[in-house]
Length: 158
Picture 1: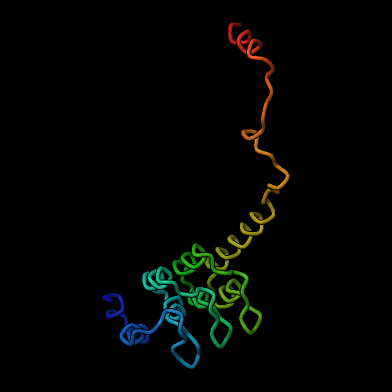
Picture 2: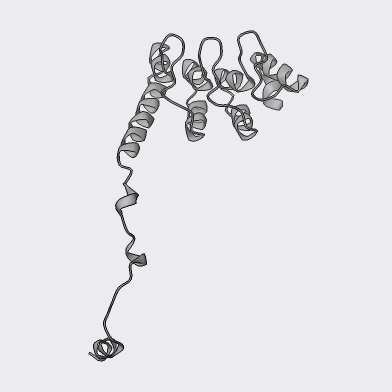
């Protein structure tokens, strides 16, 4: 709460907390939830708290923007990192067809855009490298026949 008291832009967040707003309920006419406001304000600690209390990190507002879009527009690498670590959908598009990466480039935050590009590439590589486990038989579960116990004892003597 001290963080919120020190920042005049946090009045909307403070009001939401005082009224006991649900973490996923759209509190205003723009359908921005507290997690949208936290990400859009660059309040990483408040965003973390919201995510830990079950906030929907892919909820879209009237512009079709999720919290990831909001964090990208203000250049908050901390908030982007939290959202990505919480498995936010990085390829989600707003109503203009823009991803968070697009908005980061548009608003002049290349470090945020490069971060999102890297994450997207890593997710693509990871999904393409998933082994097909249905056809693999773990070696530890296969039964092996070593023959008689006499052969085993003879091998041990050598």
